[in-house]
Figure: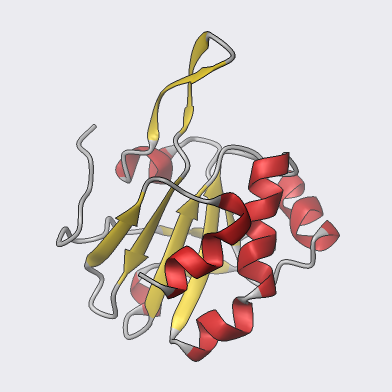
Amino acid sequence: MSALKAGDKAPAINTTDHDGNPLSLSSLKGRKVVLYFYPKDDTPGCTAEACSLRDNYRQLLDQGYSVIGVSPDNQKLHQKFAEKHELPFPLIADVDKKVIKDYGVWGLKKFMGREYEGVIRTTFIINESGIIDEVISKVDTKNHAFQVLNS
């Protein structure tokens, strides 16, 4: 898996969101996209990150951004998560990890001395032409929207 960086073309995404609606990166051409990858619905860090984006969603829209969240959780878990936290943006249930691997955010992690494979929390800022403008690898979950808005 190669690490994507600023200046790279964003890999294509053709899937459905948590409500079963078709979702493709190409359909968002002409808009900036915040594509954020997170490990698991309804965990403290992932909830803080999603709620930061939710609470500042109007500002993100005003600056021309669309927001998409991606995790390996299934559609039903995403629906519950989005409903519980009133998330106004789509979530992609990437259970086969295709998008996660295309973006190079699946890898070895450490937690409490244990090593395991999982989603490496990362956000890609994609410009109107489908090119990655920035990769945020040190995500501040509680203030993530401000990281994006100040990028």
